[in-house]
Image (cartoon, rainbow, N blue to C red; front, side, top):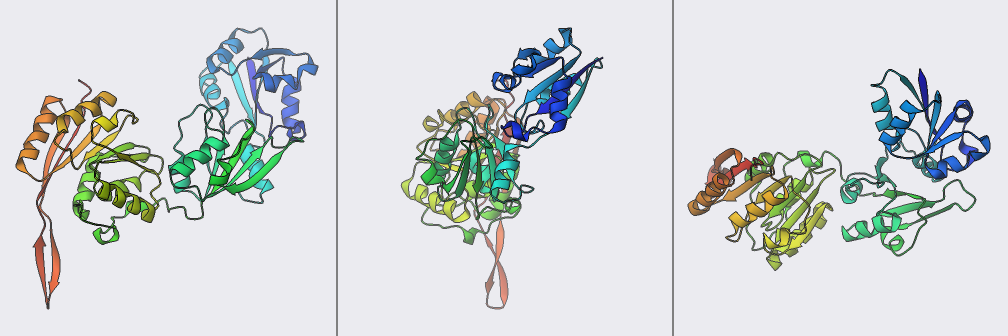
Length: 406
């Protein structure tokens, strides 16, 4: 039977390679990994296979004449490395045993240098992954980023600035554990103006981070900053957002966002997601900005324009709330389904003509699980010693899910 050791080489310097890792490397007939990992052990004159492709590595192990392999990975073998996929695949194969040998990760090293505990740090990797930077920082007092690819420290800091988080403290560690190690702490804004080595990691500290459970509560209408723009009322928001069937990682459109009440209440539920508030009215956009700042909902991007034209460059939505269509409902739904054929769509309507148009569009585009809910809310108002029930305008909530047939 063949054996694979997946060996974490630690933070970088050979001083951080522990004895168990060294033993696994010496034991191996063949070393596998990226060129940077293998170069440090050329003096051992062992057979080497240079690759970071999961399937290529698995195929090589299965067909090689060698019996003991050591796959060399940077940092900790269980922290954003090749280990996960390779272990999952090889554990199904009873011809190869797998042993993971952990080591010190860049997160542990950087936090220890700062005398900060890391048991409550949220961690993200930008190495070939889609990450939601704003949501991660918005809901966490400490967020660690493994940088790489398109997202180096400077680029991540630029995103933070764009989202309204330019004030947060950021620590960037370059070439950690090497003689040219450099650690710098400043605001995201100041660091967005600097260049950094590709071998970098960073820790973002947001002292005003939101509690992860904040999205569980219903926000009162009187908590929003309002003007002359109509606002979706609290109870209608609750029903409408519920019909969206969002997940914490969803991408959501709020079309005709108005004051931003639906945007805010939805965004606070998206701990890993993103919301796009689409609005054409200048006064409404100003209110959305003010409410976004008040509630610290930095995972909202405000898109000025008229749908569907302004949707073209946005990412594919999982859920779409339409509070106002500007007479373009059919075109909007058509554009949404081009991006995601199975998107959840919720439409609010007051006029019967708007209700009929929504139903017609749902039927035309073959939506599934279509529901029409009429909400007629009355709330008590104290008049003298009496509680009088004051009725609001009836609202129709039309919801459905794209069938994927268009």
